[in-house]
Figure 1 (tube, one colour):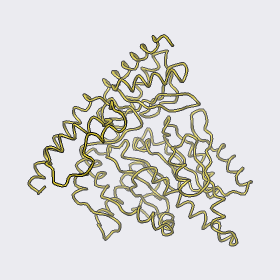
Figure 2 (tube, helix red, strand yellow):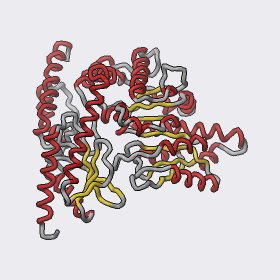
Figure 3 (cartoon, rainbow, N blue to C red):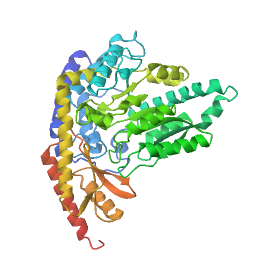
Length: 464
């Protein structure tokens, strides 16, 4: 493909993408396929001779699209949002064309410097403490990671390194291996599984802190566990607090947890993967109060801030803590700094939407969740299972777990809307997350109508 054909095919691809997104709601949101469907549709080996572009695009519809779960359909209500916008897609095209690997300032100065400035822009939108902003007199700053899971791992490894260096001088006879065997990390029983995986990779113990009736970790529960572990000769060193848990969008009490971590020399990392985007709105910013106690903070603009995957933003209070840790871990240092020009997406989106446009997007989706909540509450067959604070509604049919499992099976089989479940207090719960940028009130009303129709059919079945 030469430049002339690229121009032509590029225009065709933009038209294809625009048509796909404009008409995605006409496609079944969830595929009707069995695992392994694709292998029989394509050759067993790569072609020896070049193939033409038209045949490849025909195969996109024949082979790929039948197996796609359409995350940007306004009838997709599963998991959490996967952000998308036209400005971000255009920036991604430019990023691919420039194709730089920003492993150092010299490797691509604009890549390094724009990322630093964009993290400062976003940090100021969130009203982060000055210590997290690179363009101040503080020692912190922000960096783009691929995922919140990666940010959690980075923070845990940095905390582990810092804890070892703190303990060793006063206990010179104790080996590093012995110190590591005594380190213990903490997180909510509602936290994402990536926190547990980070501890596994880091070779440290992790304890899950029980939550209150709102599925949040409180200070007294953490303090009790820390005291128990210290009495047993262990070394508490790390807490991953969650703002907006995956099951129910619960918020740990970081104003209580932060002072405990500071007193105990424990690193506090805040994972706000989904909810963090909403903190640019003044009405949601109080949920971030307590960040001033944190050593690191992370959220995913690629979830809810209209910036396509991947773009997970992480701030640290002390850059030296991260840099120092990964001088000891050259493998991670290599991985950490092989950056693409992802900040271009932030720059395009921030400029083309403005803060007010981004706030409007968040507020609209929260309002849609509230609309769905009101529909659920008006139907006495259903119950709301967790407080609706942002764009997620946890609900279920009053009755057994089996009843709700059967309802979800019918919803999934219908392929008209897509939901996933969670477990709350031992109960099988359906999660309804507002995801697509194009979701409107009509889609909420139609989704609820579909759910109630399937519920009626389910309750008519003889076995029930």
